[in-house]
Image (cartoon, rainbow, N blue to C red; front, side, top):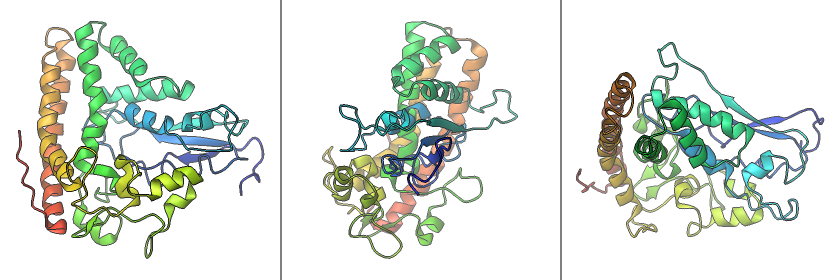
Length: 335
């Protein structure tokens, strides 16, 4: 259907091929449809990213997508072929593009449940107008306008936000392994059901789905849907970006990753360390007592207590699941 739409039509596509999970690859339609106006649909509401109870700074996630190089060899000469440039119409000269946000607010006093989740709304607005803004520009501006301009306040809250997406990913869906959430409200873990249903794959042979040129059965060669250079990179387990490796490959638990540890060891360390990491975020926020207003500080500290309880649930459930499926015992101990 590429090239068949009228100029006033914009094809609005999710950022990834699944459903706004903590991490997915970029939808291959971006860069694949050269003669169609394309817009990206991002999710501001935290359906699969903690629902405002668990802190997950989505600006970090969105910048990962926007800055991702689609490795297009036939774009406009001299123009980088990142998703950001495609959305701005600079690669294939689409006349109309857009950035859309799926959002809702609740009936809680803060609208977004967690107070820090409000940063996602602000960040979306800034990136929609200028997708090349840096995460640091957006974050520091939001903190200064929301709290104050104290260097300690700006640095502390910014650092808490910066690490929250990858922390949430580590205890819910490491290495883009797929859909691990229960069916009803997409909040708590439901791994045994999901594994038997085939949406994720964890067994004694490894973790992840073979969506590559060796694919068979329930999966197709998803890597072939990208540009030739990007497809080759994703298709090879040795060159596939590690953060996406379980989306495209069934990875042996014994595979050594770039940090010198096996993938299963990294997974276990992320799971075991998650509750302590949440405690550390709370401690960092508590250090700002007297530097920000006491009412909001108390609310944010309470939010971290809720996230801590939720991270413990995820950590214990995921460890039990991985031990059962891989037959590799978790020997990591908490800090």
